[in-house]
Image (cartoon, helix red, strand yellow):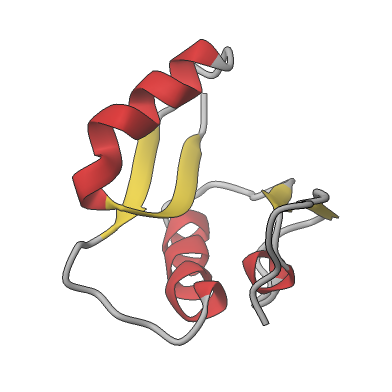
Length: 91
């Protein structure tokens, strides 16, 4: 199992866990969500220090998957995959 990191807000934890389980993801070590009061300019501003903390805890991040380019910036992953998102693109 491994930690999962999302830019979803903590207030969405219950719905997020339901979504993950319905999609077949149910063996995570932890689900890390953005604090409700946190405001950042980009996903990278939030996710990069979180990924660093995950690696500092002894994990190796082998795959980083996101639907926005800002999901993939900041390093701390051996490989990145940008998924298509036909609905929106965050600049």
